[in-house]
Length: 320
Image (cartoon, rainbow, N blue to C red; front, side, top):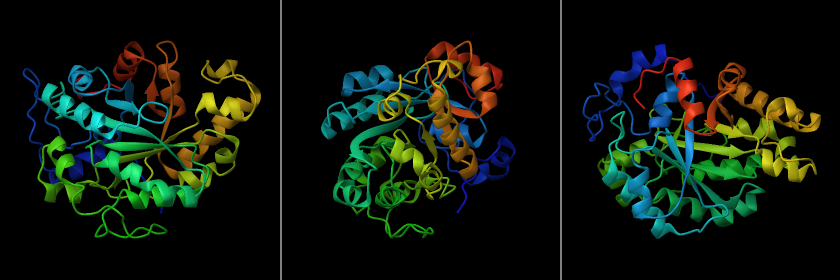
């Protein structure tokens, strides 16, 4: 099943079906959010999104509530796997909001120490993803996504059993009780949460954004297969880990400075994203953000200056 990133014209035709959020627009802003997940709302409009890093608990969350970024990458792959701290971070975000765009919080996407290396590993450890989901985050980025079978279990673990069936994805594994705290963080009722907490764009009304790090030679070999799994919304090529896997220099530099084999790896992941119509994540810099957007980058890391240049270039209307 192919996934579609909707252009802004499509958003206009469907916006009436989205309920308005409990959070109100910030003073001085006339923008009214149409979604809980700010990142998905922008991607539906055809607008690139930009992120920053996050960690810690309540104080760190409250401080980041007014971030310049569209979403926060909460690092748990190599950072502490502390679910209580993550819950406090989300509570701090909610208390420090709303954002300038009127969203209750910036979107939060967490990375995990659970890896997409094979189906057995994912089946044994999907409970970690579910504990993170229950903290109220808006998405998860699965590292080392080597196996399409593992990715299918990943998507399955982020769905309720009564969600609309999807080709190749088993019945959802989320259980009753997972919705309580997360619903409070999203500012909606538990019943609303159970309808909205589903992967987008598999579910056009879903508010959960799932991503993949196609970041080693094994994942690269399966790039098209893992990117095509229904329920995945974006992917990246992981230039640091890809360099280690291929025994080549780190790939965080400018595209023209990459080793030819690294450039080929990046191109393969970008092509897989385009083929499956999901967003591609890559570093953007103030001097190349426009070029990256033209190439097809829809999710950028690289700091506030690059983000603001990109937003001006794409004539973004949502406040930041």
